[in-house]
Length: 153
Image (cartoon, rainbow, N blue to C red; front, side, top):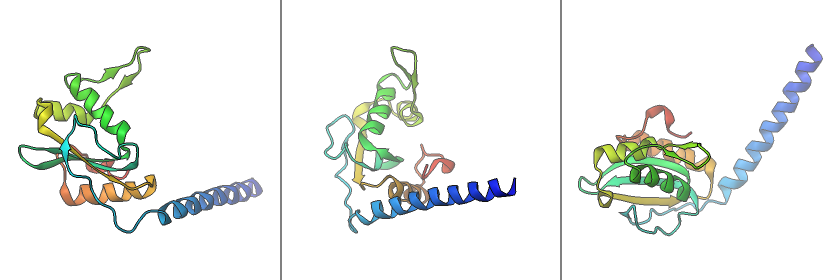
């Protein structure tokens, strides 16, 4: 039993070290200065949505950042907007799979006028680093639609 544990721990330690090395290489490719895109209506085409990074959803009449997220920016934007356009209800695919968005639901409940929502993004290029940026911004800006426990996930 003891020998198995040592072998297993060594194996898992080596696996973790490989992941850390990969993440370090990924972070080293990120420029030291990144710029947010100019916020514009969420229903417009946004250059850079194919990137991995961080995004802000802003309620334009109040100019308040209501949500901050990270990941595949285009996919996240599409999911939030899809649920919003579905009356704030979870989308159900043809095969019955639900596709929800708490942010899309909260946006619709807060203000159902799609033209009152802006979107801005920060193309980071690293999922790992994007998690830290998201967590930092959520702690600083305290967006109404984000749950504290979800930052950096």
